[in-house]
Structures are given as structure tokens and as C-alpha cells.
Image (cartoon, rainbow, N blue to C red; front, top):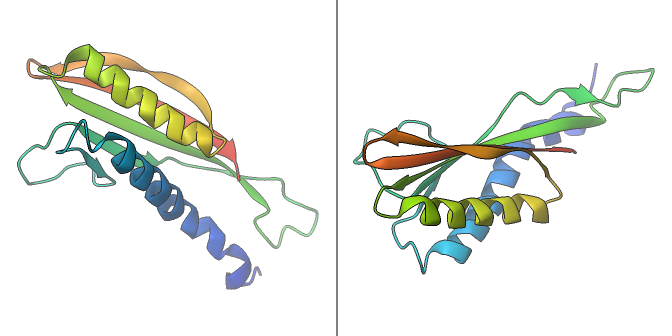
Length: 136
């Protein structure tokens, strides 16, 4: 059986990546978007705050097992981002924030899996969902 100390990193990936990306996004975008919300919570009961960036880690399978298979050697880590902006910010605002999100994940050596389809979520908002993946 694997020792806890050799597998703890598996459970720390999500919070580490999220914290790095969130910190960098807030630094890069807070001047232009002072009400920017970067969160891991999918649904908030509070009043909607826009623009918002929801970041979550998706299922990320173990890879690179050795013959002993007693440790997790690597994972194929996938993150999904949901960017929502008001119609006042428009597609230009959505693209600017999307470009910043892409830049932050690329700095962490992630590959873009899906660029993010832009949809009109409601009559008042636009949304883009993108995915990023890398081996850790």
C-alpha cells in the first residue's frame, strides 16, 4: 500500500494550481475589472458578480505506473474554466479575459484542449468554457 506522504501531492494539485492561477489573474485584471470574481464554487447564493471566472479540476487519471504500482507517479491533469461577463462588457471583454486565462495556464505549461465556445448564456450575459491539460 502506498504511503500517505508519497501520494499527498495528488490531493494538493487542485488547490495549488487554482491559487497560482487566481492570484495571477487578479493581479493582471483587477485594474480593468475591479469586481472580478475568481472562484472554485460553481453556484453562489450571493448576488451575481461579473465578470466571473469559475475554475475546476476535472477527472484526472493516473498515468505512468511502474511494475510495483505502489505510488502515483504522474497524472493527466485537466482544468475547466467558465468565464461569464455581462452583455455590457460584450465579446471584447470576454475575449480579453479568456486570453488572460489562457496565458496563465500556458505559463504553467498546460495545453489548451478546447479554446472555449462563446455562448449567450442569458439575455444579459456571455459565457465561454475552456479546458487545459498537462501531465504532472
